[in-house]
Image (cartoon, rainbow, N blue to C red; front, side):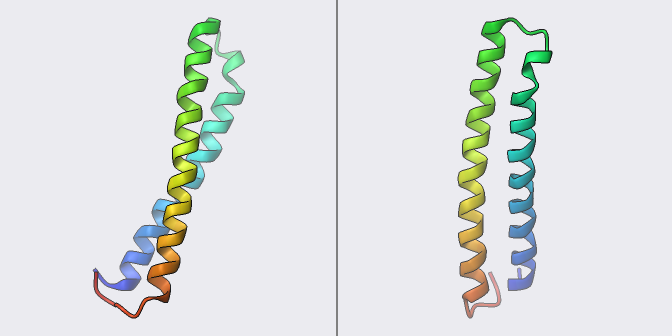
Length: 77
């Protein structure tokens, strides 16, 4: 895989994590309309919070990796 191909792949992953952050927040904010009982609503929020946190951490990691690859001299990975 060339450097440019890797950068495209990493950028796609970063964009997916950005979308997951938005969607998980949106879904969490609309759970009150779901008709779920309180227990299920709270469990759903807990799962969405985990997804949100992990997507955020992954996005930061990908951003750092993108910067490292961009600055690197290596052209084949």
